[in-house]
Image (cartoon, rainbow, N blue to C red; front, side, top):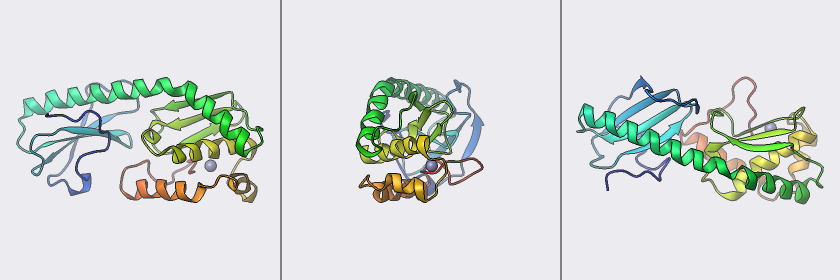
Amino acid sequence: MPADPSSRTAGENPRSAASAPRTVPSPQSRGSGASAVEVRRSSRRRRTVSAYREGDRTVVLIPARMSEAEEQRWVSVMLDKLAAQESKRMLGDAELAARAELLSGQYLGGRARPASVRWVTNQNTRWGSCTPAEGSIRLSHRLQGMPEYVVDYVLLHELAHLLVPGHGRRFWQLLEAYPRTERARGYLEGVVAAGRLPHLSGPGDDQP
Ligand SMILES: [Zn+2]
């Protein structure tokens, strides 16, 4: 089987890829946040092709011996597959809203009532964000596929921001009831440390 469409992050560790990466403009970025495609050739990779999002780029891993024509074809195939996966996941917004209501009831006395909760694919530098004035919460699609307690934590974090802006003591007190706050934060730190963005802080970043 030449391709592994199901693995957003599977494959070799990008940092161990033997050849120098090169970045080319994506021929088909569809406004989903992917602005460039980086093709990495690996001599250890024989037949499999995989692709994943990293920051605002899409990384495609291919075998070192692949021809230019094959490369172009596979990049196109993998971009399509990623886009299809992402659009499928976007249908989960209803479940996400239900989850938010449950978490708010369980840990925040039902006081956090978002007007909208949804996945977004254009949020590459933060896991989640909220706009209290609008009551809107957005979660990065990068959380999809992570353990449920991690997604719950980020969701609860953003819900808490509807009640308390900033990250002061009052804010963290709201999260004390959630038993896996530390574990979830450790998990997310590990993901960042492993080099799979979102990056660490930048201006205006919320960093659950
Ligand atoms: Zn925050």
